[in-house]
Image (cartoon, rainbow, N blue to C red):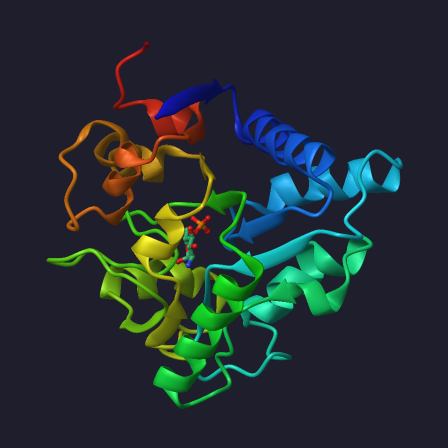
Length: 244
Ligand SMILES: N[C@@H]1[C@@H](O)[C@H](O)[C@@H](COP(=O)(O)O)O[C@@H]1O
């Protein structure tokens, strides 16, 4: 696990966007695993800026998002389908048919999850998987548990995740209680993993991910076992980590 220290959120976003850009430039038809949440917004803005300057071409890129709330339609403004269109897809020349997000509008969890696994396996596991991290160490929506998950599955969100994500909803009661998420095993199948983290609220999770025991109680800790994982975190998120 390589840890890159960023000054602040803007610096973290630029560093992360540089790593993603290198992937797209080196392999124009690459498969990117993408994440939602507030953390990647700056990274996506930087990629859009470079695309607008003519430095990046998404024409052949395919993307697989980590997760989606169960029960939200693709057009719901809180859905991750909507988030990805608003924050990236609508602003670059990516082919909509090459973008994939689990189908939260399908109430049949088994069907929705196995269709997503089949779609990922058909295109191939991501060359690069971008990840944020939850305050409790979750990746995607893989919450702390007593075992690591495998393929895409339906999860019950923890109270702490519901509270953390409620800032984006009118009321905490509006936050869906379940989500479909790629499993830890699928995440680990990516060739390269890029984790981004910003702010003091993430300091404990970043410490546990990088220096704690590898345990499903902190799902991100399994990334210590990935052979090509880069963490880009700002000073605030690294306050509990030793200065290396
Ligand atoms: N499912 C997403 C995760 O993929 C994300 O990493 C996490 C952190 O979000 P934020 O970046 O807003 O702190 O939130 C959500 O729960």
